[in-house]
Amino acid sequence: MFETPEIAWAPLAPILIVLGAGAVGVLIEAFVRRPSTRRSVQLVFGLVTLAVALGTAVVQWVALEGAGTIVAEGMLTVDRQSLAWQAMLLVFGLLGLILFASRTRAGEGAFTPLGSTSPGSIEETLARRRGLEVTEVFPLLLFAVGGMMLFTAVTDYVFLFVALEVFSLALYIMVALARRRRLMSHEGALKYFLLGAFSSALYIFGVALVYGATGSTSFDGVRDGIVASGRYDGILLVGVVLLLVGLLFKIGAVPFHSWVPDAYQGAPTPVTAFMGAATKAAATAALVRIVYTSLDPLEWQISWLFWAVAIASMALGTVLALVQTNVKRMLAYSSVAHAGFILVAFAGFTGEALAALPFYLLAYGLATIGAFAVVSQVRERTEDGAVGAEAVRLGQWAGLGKRSPLLAGAMSLFLLSFAGIPLTAGFIGKFTVFAAAVAGGGWVLVVIAVIASAVAAFFYVRLVVLMFLTDVPEGVENAVEVEDGPLARLVIMICAAAVLVLGILPAGALDVFTDAAQFLVSAG
Image (cartoon, rainbow, N blue to C red; front, side, top):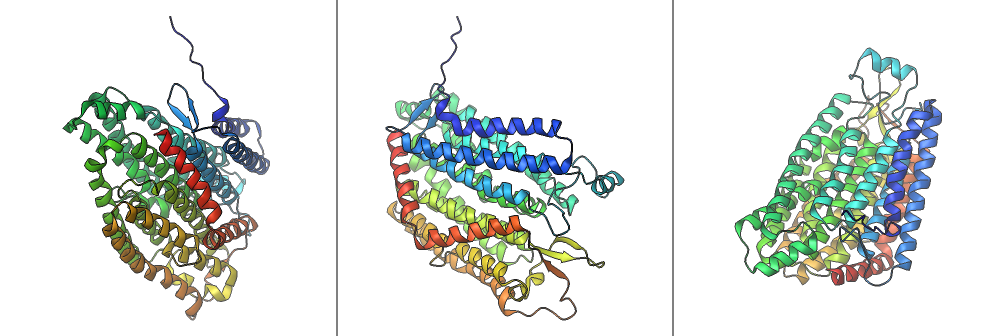
C-alpha cells in the first residue's frame, strides 16, 4: 500500500513563494496583453514577491529552533546556513530584477523585442516598431532564484540535480535574449547550454557511481556508507570527482571555465550581473554543504582537487584578464580568478570557511552587480547621434571621470573591492577566506592567492587610470554617451553603499554568518 508522505511545507515558504510566483508570472504573460502594462505588472509583482520571500526567510531565521528542520524525508534541510544563503540570493534577485527593468533615455531595454526572431530579420524590425517586449525574463528570473534557493537546502544528490536544472535552464534562455549584438548573445548561450549539459551529465554519472559504491544518494547516507566501508575504492573516488566537477563548472573554475567569457560578453548586461553574482553563490552553497556534511571522510582523498583547481583558476584567470581589451571579458576572467579565491577557503576543510565563504560571496556579488550596472550605462553613440550598444572597449572608457564623476567613482569602488583594497568589502572577504585557509594549513595557497591578487590589481587600476587620468582622444569626444537611467543608478548606489558599509563595519554580517556556520557543522 502506498503511503502519502507528510511534508512540512512551512519551512519551505521562501522557496515556494518564489517558485509559485514564477508560475503566476507565466500566466501574467498570457493574460496581460499590452507590453508596457505587462512589463510594469511583472516588475512590481516580482519585486513584491522577492521582498516577501526575503521577509519570510528573516522571520524563519529568528524563529528557528535548534539546528534546523529536516523536510521531505531528509531530502531538504532548512537551517541557518541555508537561510543565510537564501537571503543573499533574494537580495541579488531584487537588484537583478530592478536592473532588468532599466531603460535608456530613448526607452530601449536590454532585451530583444521578440526572442523567437532571427537577428536582423524583418520580423525583429517589425517587433521593435510595434513596441514589443520580452517580459518573460521576469518570471524566468524568479524561476532561477527559486532554483538557486532550493540548491542551497537540498541534501540529496538526485534532488540537487533537479534544482540545478531548474535555475540553469532559465539562465540559458536569458543569456540568448540580448537586444544588441544578438549573434554574440546566441553564441554565448549555445556554448553555455552545451557545456552546461555536458557538466550536468558528468555530475549525474558521478552520482550513479557514488550510489553504486555506497547504496545511497542522500548526503547522510553517502557519508555513512563511506565510513562503514572503511575503504575508498576507485568507483567511489571517480564518482566523487565527477559530481564535484559539475559544481565547479557552475562556479566557473579552471578548467571548467570556457563558457564564462563568451556567456558574460554575449548575455544582456543585466543578466550577466545577476548570473555572475547569484550562480557563484548558489554553487558555493551547495559545494559547502556537500563537502562538510557528506564527503568530509574523504578530505585527504579530494583535497588535491581543490588545491589544483584553485591554483589554476587564480593563475589563468589573472593572466587572461591582463590581456583583455573588452571590459565585460576582463570582468569575466576576473570572475574565474575569484573562483580560485573561493576554493582557497576549502584548504583543510576548516570550520572558519563556513563563515568566510558567505561573506566573500556577498561582497563579490554586490560588487559584480554594481560593476555591470555601470557597464550598462556607458553607451556608444552611433553616426546619426542615437544611443547604441554598451561601450565595452577599454579605450572608450577614457575620460569617463570627467563625463560622469559619480559613475566612474562607483566603478572604481567596485574594482578596488575586487582587488581587495582596505575599506572595501572585498578586502574583508579575502582576509576571512585567507585566514580560513591558513587555519587549515593552506598557507601555500594563501601565498599564491596574495600574489595573484597583487597582479590582478594591475588590470583593475588600469581601468581606474583610464577613467580619471586619461584624456579623451581628439575627434571621439562624442563617441560615448553616459546614460542616467534611474533604476540602474539606484542599483549602483545600493551596491556602492553596501560595499563600503561591509568594508568599514563588517562585524554584523560576520556575526550572522558565524551563527550560520555553527549550525551547519552540528547538522553534519
